[in-house]
Length: 332
Image (cartoon, rainbow, N blue to C red; front, side):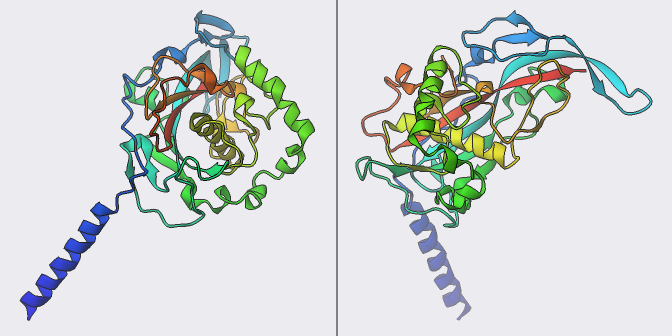
């Protein structure tokens, strides 16, 4: 009798395993990101000490502290420590943008079973309707720490590679009205006059860097609001992927999950919360499914400059982006 129950149990387990294997989501694809060959390392530049550039870059820089010497708080009896103010661009996060719920694009393209909280029915066919819906996953990516390029703990993101946010678990990511709890000001900018101002932001992002004062604009990509995965018009999947990565970045700023180090004429000893994302302090780079290791782009700069050859005709609409962040800090 025991043998029969054991045999029955093995059959059930085998059926479950077989079913899970056959249930692989064919709409999910991706690849592991190579931290050496898939990363645009020249995007770390320009680097600066104080306000003086010590290495130039191809993209515009942000403002830096005027004085290279900074004083930071220290425990008694010292109270103050002298440090050197430096600035550079750090690869600090990655995003998956996908129509397939649970698809981990930057982790090899496999699917994980996620409870259907706020998931909704993501569109999986390119021509279903003019708009669409994507999920976004945010990864913590402390690459500078891994490679030990900079040794000062206060001048890099530490910790481990980790999944920091899954939009499938966030009911606000699917519902524009529910998202108003985190971005109530979206009501003020959902009009033609406010959106016309975004033309200036798009031009600025093309020739230099985005305009931080126009925080509701995402340059040539569209509108920052609402903080959801809903897109009512889609010019291209690559554009949608960048726009939703930028929206998620802003959303995590608003929720206090991303802090910043904006230091002009002040010591930049600590990070602090910024509920309005400083757009000019971010760059993006495509890493999936076709990596582009030769260039990165200011937030809001149109994909038309680089999209040729970056998406196949049979694309399943899965994208991965590396997010670069300007880091101002004090080396103690």
